[in-house]
Length: 169
Image 1 (cartoon, rainbow, N blue to C red):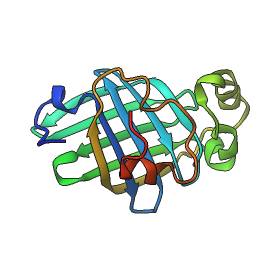
Image 2 (tube, one colour):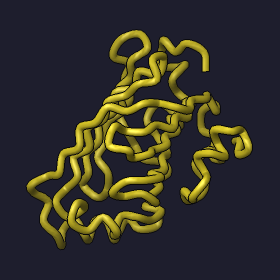
Image 3 (spheres, helix red, strand yellow):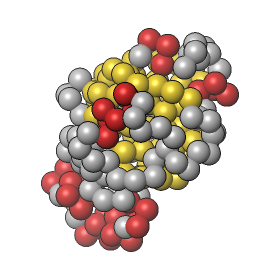
């Protein structure tokens, strides 16, 4: 990706990054209000989501915020600084997700009812807050609304295939 200054240059961005705690995430900024993502490692590694509605804004040239609430009740706020290969994220996991992360490790779109049911069945508070800096180690603009970018579950070696160019979209 070239230098990203404005929101229209950020949209369509495909990013793979590692948080300071070692968790690997992948995000595709599908359009002005939608993302798709895969979680490769960490507490909810193996989880993947398509068509998550979000709020995306440009804070200043080259800095963008994406924020949303998931059906699990998890709140997320990410600040992307792609020109410096950095981001900062804060994830607010409900108590139930922290205590039962395995429930969320799935293709969420097929289990919305389970997420909503778990939100009611288990405790929400106190939230488990994870504030982390991250390093972006892959970025490419895949164009907006490319349904091929996040179209399958994460698997061992997938990141390496994307980074090497063996797996393209």
